[in-house]
Length: 115
Image (cartoon, rainbow, N blue to C red; front, side, top):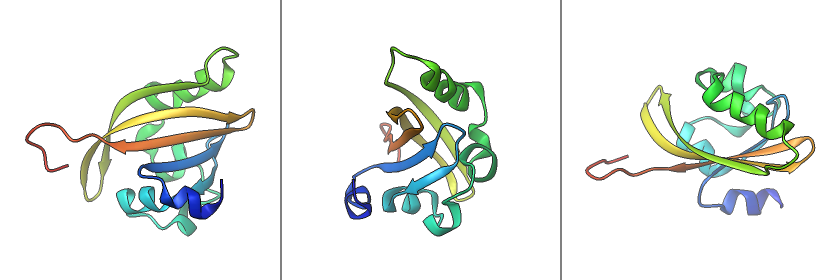
């Protein structure tokens, strides 16, 4: 997928290696997080960019997915405590290859929410 195609996706897309180093970061995710892709590419998602995700419920799920020969994706809800406000999202982790994982981030709009 080209950078232009990645940027056209209607959800956040972060491509990381199996250690969590960000390789690609699309425009939707940049808008949601308010982080410039140039600032995050090459940095570790779990340690440097979103340390709130360095927990079993997120990073642990990615490690389990990477280690699994049977599963190719996992989806779960997550709450990001951004500096600009908390955002509820649906996360899908998907193996793209043996050494890359897509972190897809989609906003969850709850009834009565302006999220």
